[in-house]
Amino acid sequence: MLTPKENWLIAAKGGKPAWVPSFTEDANVFLPPIWGMDPETGTDFCNVKWVTDDTGEMPDPNWRAMEDVADWRDVIAFPDLSQLDWEQLAADFHGDGYDPDKVDIAMANTAGIFLIPINMMGWVDGLCAIYEDPEELDALTAALTDFLVELIGYLGRYIKPDIIFSGDDIASGDGPFFSREMFQEHYKPHFRRIADAIHEQGALAEFHCCGNNGYLIEEILDMGYDICQLPVPNDDLRADKERFGDRLVITGGWERHGDAGLPGASEEVVRASVRKAIDDFGRDGALIFWDGGIIGTSEDSKQKMEWLMDELREYGSRIYQQ
Image (cartoon, rainbow, N blue to C red; front, side):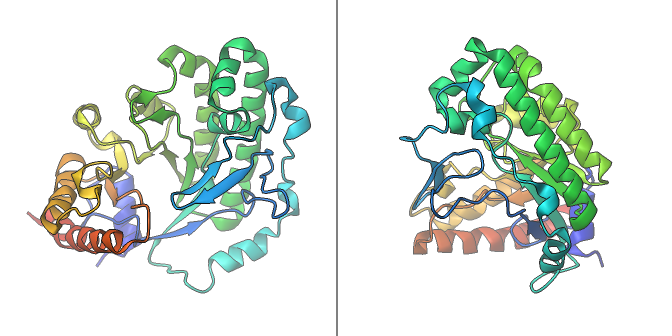
Protein backbone atom coordinates (compact mmCIF):
# COMPACT_ATOMS: atom_id res chain seq x y z
CA MET A 1 0.00 0.00 0.00
CA LEU A 2 1.43 3.36 -1.02
CA THR A 3 1.70 6.17 1.49
CA PRO A 4 0.20 9.54 0.48
CA LYS A 5 3.77 10.81 0.02
CA GLU A 6 4.75 7.97 -2.30
CA ASN A 7 1.52 8.37 -4.24
CA TRP A 8 2.00 12.15 -4.53
CA LEU A 9 5.56 11.86 -5.81
CA ILE A 10 4.47 9.49 -8.55
CA ALA A 11 2.06 12.14 -9.82
CA ALA A 12 4.59 14.95 -9.26
CA LYS A 13 7.06 13.18 -11.53
CA GLY A 14 4.47 12.81 -14.28
CA GLY A 15 3.28 9.30 -13.49
CA LYS A 16 -0.07 7.70 -12.84
CA PRO A 17 -0.52 7.21 -9.08
CA ALA A 18 -2.93 4.89 -7.30
CA TRP A 19 -5.31 7.80 -6.57
CA VAL A 20 -5.45 11.54 -7.20
CA PRO A 21 -3.32 13.25 -4.51
CA SER A 22 -4.89 16.05 -2.48
CA PHE A 23 -2.85 19.19 -1.85
CA THR A 24 -5.15 20.00 1.04
CA GLU A 25 -4.83 16.69 2.85
CA ASP A 26 -1.59 14.99 1.81
CA ALA A 27 1.18 17.53 2.51
CA ASN A 28 3.27 18.92 5.36
CA VAL A 29 4.00 22.56 4.45
CA PHE A 30 6.87 24.67 5.81
CA LEU A 31 6.96 28.46 5.44
CA PRO A 32 10.11 30.23 6.68
CA PRO A 33 9.42 33.00 9.22
CA ILE A 34 10.87 35.83 7.13
CA TRP A 35 7.83 37.07 5.22
CA GLY A 36 5.85 38.40 8.14
CA MET A 37 5.01 42.00 8.96
CA ASP A 38 6.63 44.19 11.57
CA PRO A 39 3.96 44.52 14.30
CA GLU A 40 4.75 48.21 14.76
CA THR A 41 4.96 49.40 11.14
CA GLY A 42 2.84 46.77 9.38
CA THR A 43 5.56 46.46 6.73
CA ASP A 44 7.67 43.53 5.55
CA PHE A 45 11.43 43.63 4.90
CA CYS A 46 10.79 45.18 1.48
CA ASN A 47 8.90 48.04 3.21
CA VAL A 48 5.60 46.87 1.72
CA LYS A 49 2.68 47.64 4.03
CA TRP A 50 -0.04 45.02 4.16
CA VAL A 51 -3.71 45.27 5.06
CA THR A 52 -5.99 42.40 6.00
CA ASP A 53 -9.66 42.00 5.21
CA ASP A 54 -12.10 39.14 4.62
CA THR A 55 -10.32 38.14 1.41
CA GLY A 56 -6.85 37.90 2.96
CA GLU A 57 -3.71 40.06 2.96
CA MET A 58 -3.03 42.58 0.20
CA PRO A 59 -0.54 45.45 -0.20
CA ASP A 60 -1.94 48.74 1.06
CA PRO A 61 -2.92 50.65 -2.13
CA ASN A 62 -2.25 53.95 -0.39
CA TRP A 63 1.34 53.07 0.54
CA ARG A 64 4.53 53.20 -1.51
CA ALA A 65 7.65 51.43 -0.29
CA MET A 66 9.61 53.60 -2.72
CA GLU A 67 8.87 56.09 -5.48
CA ASP A 68 11.89 55.34 -7.68
CA VAL A 69 13.13 51.83 -8.47
CA ALA A 70 16.71 53.11 -8.14
CA ASP A 71 16.11 53.57 -4.40
CA TRP A 72 15.71 49.84 -3.72
CA ARG A 73 19.14 49.45 -2.08
CA ASP A 74 18.15 51.97 0.59
CA VAL A 75 14.73 50.43 1.13
CA ILE A 76 15.04 46.65 1.24
CA ALA A 77 16.52 45.17 4.42
CA PHE A 78 17.22 41.56 3.48
CA PRO A 79 17.08 39.29 6.55
CA ASP A 80 20.34 37.67 7.58
CA LEU A 81 19.38 34.05 6.97
CA SER A 82 22.42 32.77 8.85
CA GLN A 83 20.98 34.24 12.05
CA LEU A 84 17.83 32.11 11.97
CA ASP A 85 17.83 29.06 14.23
CA TRP A 86 17.38 26.60 11.38
CA GLU A 87 17.88 23.54 13.55
CA GLN A 88 15.03 24.65 15.81
CA LEU A 89 12.85 25.53 12.82
CA ALA A 90 13.43 22.05 11.42
CA ALA A 91 12.65 20.47 14.78
CA ASP A 92 9.43 22.46 15.06
CA PHE A 93 8.39 21.49 11.54
CA HIS A 94 8.94 17.82 12.29
CA GLY A 95 7.24 18.09 15.68
CA ASP A 96 3.60 17.97 16.69
CA GLY A 97 1.25 17.50 13.76
CA TYR A 98 3.94 16.31 11.36
CA ASP A 99 3.01 13.20 9.38
CA PRO A 100 5.96 11.28 7.87
CA ASP A 101 3.61 9.59 5.43
CA LYS A 102 2.81 12.93 3.77
CA VAL A 103 4.92 14.82 1.25
CA ASP A 104 7.11 17.66 2.56
CA ILE A 105 6.77 21.02 0.79
CA ALA A 106 8.86 24.08 1.64
CA MET A 107 7.49 27.41 0.44
CA ALA A 108 10.42 29.65 -0.42
CA ASN A 109 8.18 32.59 -1.32
CA THR A 110 4.74 33.59 -2.48
CA ALA A 111 5.52 37.01 -3.99
CA GLY A 112 8.68 36.82 -6.07
CA ILE A 113 11.11 38.63 -8.34
CA PHE A 114 8.32 40.13 -10.47
CA LEU A 115 5.64 40.82 -7.89
CA ILE A 116 7.81 42.24 -5.09
CA PRO A 117 8.82 45.36 -7.09
CA ILE A 118 5.16 45.75 -8.11
CA ASN A 119 4.11 45.56 -4.46
CA MET A 120 6.75 48.11 -3.57
CA MET A 121 5.82 50.68 -6.23
CA GLY A 122 2.28 49.89 -7.31
CA TRP A 123 1.20 48.42 -10.61
CA VAL A 124 1.58 51.50 -12.78
CA ASP A 125 5.02 52.59 -11.58
CA GLY A 126 6.24 49.01 -11.21
CA LEU A 127 5.39 48.09 -14.79
CA CYS A 128 6.64 51.43 -16.13
CA ALA A 129 10.02 50.75 -14.49
CA ILE A 130 10.57 47.93 -17.00
CA TYR A 131 10.61 50.59 -19.73
CA GLU A 132 11.93 53.62 -17.88
CA ASP A 133 14.78 52.13 -15.83
CA PRO A 134 15.39 48.54 -16.95
CA GLU A 135 18.95 48.47 -15.61
CA GLU A 136 17.89 49.26 -12.05
CA LEU A 137 14.93 46.90 -12.25
CA ASP A 138 17.21 44.12 -13.47
CA ALA A 139 19.61 44.85 -10.61
CA LEU A 140 16.74 44.57 -8.13
CA THR A 141 15.53 41.37 -9.78
CA ALA A 142 19.02 39.88 -9.55
CA ALA A 143 19.33 40.82 -5.86
CA LEU A 144 15.96 39.23 -5.07
CA THR A 145 17.04 36.12 -6.96
CA ASP A 146 20.30 35.95 -5.00
CA PHE A 147 18.33 36.11 -1.76
CA LEU A 148 15.91 33.37 -2.83
CA VAL A 149 18.74 31.12 -3.98
CA GLU A 150 20.40 31.54 -0.58
CA LEU A 151 17.10 30.80 1.16
CA ILE A 152 16.58 27.67 -0.94
CA GLY A 153 20.00 26.46 0.19
CA TYR A 154 18.95 26.69 3.83
CA LEU A 155 15.63 24.98 3.11
CA GLY A 156 17.39 22.08 1.45
CA ARG A 157 20.03 21.76 4.15
CA TYR A 158 17.73 21.83 7.17
CA ILE A 159 14.14 21.10 6.11
CA LYS A 160 15.09 18.58 3.39
CA PRO A 161 11.75 18.85 1.55
CA ASP A 162 10.58 16.72 -1.34
CA ILE A 163 9.32 19.83 -3.14
CA ILE A 164 10.33 23.48 -2.93
CA PHE A 165 7.67 25.94 -4.00
CA SER A 166 8.42 29.37 -5.46
CA GLY A 167 5.54 31.66 -6.26
CA ASP A 168 5.14 34.68 -8.49
CA ASP A 169 1.88 35.89 -9.99
CA ILE A 170 3.19 36.86 -13.43
CA ALA A 171 -0.23 36.52 -15.07
CA SER A 172 -3.76 37.72 -14.40
CA GLY A 173 -7.01 36.03 -15.31
CA ASP A 174 -6.65 37.58 -18.77
CA GLY A 175 -3.10 36.42 -19.48
CA PRO A 176 0.57 37.26 -18.76
CA PHE A 177 1.44 40.78 -17.70
CA PHE A 178 4.10 41.18 -20.40
CA SER A 179 5.18 39.90 -23.78
CA ARG A 180 7.17 36.72 -24.22
CA GLU A 181 10.16 38.78 -25.37
CA MET A 182 10.05 40.97 -22.26
CA PHE A 183 9.72 37.92 -20.02
CA GLN A 184 12.68 36.21 -21.68
CA GLU A 185 14.88 39.30 -21.40
CA HIS A 186 14.10 40.47 -17.87
CA TYR A 187 12.88 37.46 -15.90
CA LYS A 188 13.53 34.06 -17.45
CA PRO A 189 17.25 33.77 -16.56
CA HIS A 190 16.48 34.58 -12.93
CA PHE A 191 13.59 32.12 -12.68
CA ARG A 192 15.86 29.47 -14.20
CA ARG A 193 18.44 30.15 -11.49
CA ILE A 194 15.77 29.56 -8.85
CA ALA A 195 14.72 26.25 -10.45
CA ASP A 196 18.36 25.16 -10.70
CA ALA A 197 18.95 26.03 -7.04
CA ILE A 198 15.95 23.90 -6.02
CA HIS A 199 17.20 20.93 -8.01
CA GLU A 200 20.65 21.32 -6.44
CA GLN A 201 18.94 20.61 -3.11
CA GLY A 202 17.53 17.35 -4.46
CA ALA A 203 13.95 18.65 -4.49
CA LEU A 204 11.32 19.00 -7.18
CA ALA A 205 10.70 22.60 -8.27
CA GLU A 206 7.13 23.86 -8.15
CA PHE A 207 6.16 27.20 -9.73
CA HIS A 208 3.05 29.01 -8.52
CA CYS A 209 1.16 31.38 -10.79
CA CYS A 210 -2.59 31.52 -10.24
CA GLY A 211 -3.40 33.27 -13.49
CA ASN A 212 -4.15 32.51 -17.11
CA ASN A 213 -0.59 31.50 -17.90
CA GLY A 214 -0.83 31.41 -21.70
CA TYR A 215 2.62 31.14 -23.27
CA LEU A 216 4.17 31.03 -19.79
CA ILE A 217 3.36 27.31 -19.44
CA GLU A 218 5.92 26.54 -22.12
CA GLU A 219 8.41 28.93 -20.55
CA ILE A 220 7.94 27.45 -17.07
CA LEU A 221 8.68 23.98 -18.40
CA ASP A 222 11.65 25.26 -20.38
CA MET A 223 13.10 26.87 -17.24
CA GLY A 224 13.14 23.45 -15.62
CA TYR A 225 10.21 23.57 -13.21
CA ASP A 226 8.64 20.20 -12.52
CA ILE A 227 5.17 21.30 -11.38
CA CYS A 228 2.88 24.21 -12.31
CA GLN A 229 0.67 25.29 -9.44
CA LEU A 230 -2.82 26.75 -9.97
CA PRO A 231 -2.79 27.87 -13.60
CA VAL A 232 -6.36 28.96 -14.42
CA PRO A 233 -8.20 26.10 -16.16
CA ASN A 234 -9.27 27.07 -19.67
CA ASP A 235 -9.19 25.77 -23.24
CA ASP A 236 -5.57 26.84 -23.71
CA LEU A 237 -4.45 24.98 -20.62
CA ARG A 238 -6.31 21.88 -21.76
CA ALA A 239 -4.55 22.18 -25.12
CA ASP A 240 -1.22 22.53 -23.31
CA LYS A 241 -2.00 19.37 -21.34
CA GLU A 242 -2.62 17.52 -24.60
CA ARG A 243 0.56 18.97 -26.07
CA PHE A 244 2.96 18.35 -23.20
CA GLY A 245 1.35 15.25 -21.67
CA ASP A 246 3.05 14.04 -18.50
CA ARG A 247 5.65 16.81 -18.74
CA LEU A 248 2.96 19.22 -17.58
CA VAL A 249 2.26 18.31 -13.96
CA ILE A 250 -0.45 20.50 -12.46
CA THR A 251 -1.27 21.31 -8.87
CA GLY A 252 -4.83 22.58 -9.05
CA GLY A 253 -7.11 21.75 -11.94
CA TRP A 254 -10.33 22.93 -10.32
CA GLU A 255 -12.11 25.96 -11.81
CA ARG A 256 -12.45 28.05 -8.68
CA HIS A 257 -13.91 30.95 -10.67
CA GLY A 258 -16.57 28.79 -12.29
CA ASP A 259 -20.15 27.95 -11.33
CA ALA A 260 -19.07 25.57 -8.57
CA GLY A 261 -17.30 28.39 -6.74
CA LEU A 262 -20.29 30.71 -6.71
CA PRO A 263 -22.32 31.24 -3.52
CA GLY A 264 -25.16 28.76 -3.33
CA ALA A 265 -23.68 26.32 -5.85
CA SER A 266 -25.51 22.99 -5.66
CA GLU A 267 -23.98 19.72 -4.58
CA GLU A 268 -24.44 18.36 -8.09
CA VAL A 269 -22.56 21.28 -9.66
CA VAL A 270 -19.68 21.09 -7.14
CA ARG A 271 -19.23 17.33 -7.52
CA ALA A 272 -19.38 17.54 -11.32
CA SER A 273 -16.68 20.24 -11.27
CA VAL A 274 -14.33 17.92 -9.38
CA ARG A 275 -14.82 15.13 -11.90
CA LYS A 276 -14.25 17.56 -14.78
CA ALA A 277 -11.01 18.82 -13.28
CA ILE A 278 -9.68 15.29 -12.91
CA ASP A 279 -10.85 14.26 -16.38
CA ASP A 280 -9.36 17.36 -18.02
CA PHE A 281 -5.99 17.45 -16.30
CA GLY A 282 -5.36 14.14 -14.56
CA ARG A 283 -6.95 11.24 -16.42
CA ASP A 284 -3.48 9.83 -17.15
CA GLY A 285 -1.91 11.06 -13.92
CA ALA A 286 0.38 14.05 -13.35
CA LEU A 287 -2.26 15.93 -11.28
CA ILE A 288 -2.25 16.99 -7.65
CA PHE A 289 -5.79 18.22 -7.04
CA TRP A 290 -6.27 21.53 -5.25
CA ASP A 291 -9.28 23.79 -5.14
CA GLY A 292 -6.98 26.79 -4.71
CA GLY A 293 -8.62 27.77 -1.46
CA ILE A 294 -12.27 28.76 -1.39
CA ILE A 295 -12.03 32.18 0.22
CA GLY A 296 -14.15 32.71 3.29
CA THR A 297 -15.40 30.77 6.27
CA SER A 298 -19.11 30.94 5.55
CA GLU A 299 -21.34 27.92 5.97
CA ASP A 300 -21.75 27.92 2.20
CA SER A 301 -17.98 27.63 1.69
CA LYS A 302 -17.68 24.91 4.31
CA GLN A 303 -20.46 22.93 2.67
CA LYS A 304 -18.88 23.22 -0.77
CA MET A 305 -15.55 22.06 0.64
CA GLU A 306 -17.21 18.99 2.16
CA TRP A 307 -18.76 18.04 -1.18
CA LEU A 308 -15.56 18.83 -3.06
CA MET A 309 -13.27 16.76 -0.84
CA ASP A 310 -15.74 13.88 -0.66
CA GLU A 311 -15.96 13.73 -4.45
CA LEU A 312 -12.18 13.91 -4.75
CA ARG A 313 -11.82 10.92 -2.44
CA GLU A 314 -14.57 8.96 -4.19
CA TYR A 315 -13.87 9.73 -7.86
CA GLY A 316 -10.15 10.27 -7.37
CA SER A 317 -9.74 6.86 -5.77
CA ARG A 318 -11.20 4.95 -8.71
CA ILE A 319 -10.20 6.96 -11.78
CA TYR A 320 -6.90 5.10 -12.19
CA GLN A 321 -8.41 1.71 -11.40
CA GLN A 322 -10.63 1.70 -14.46
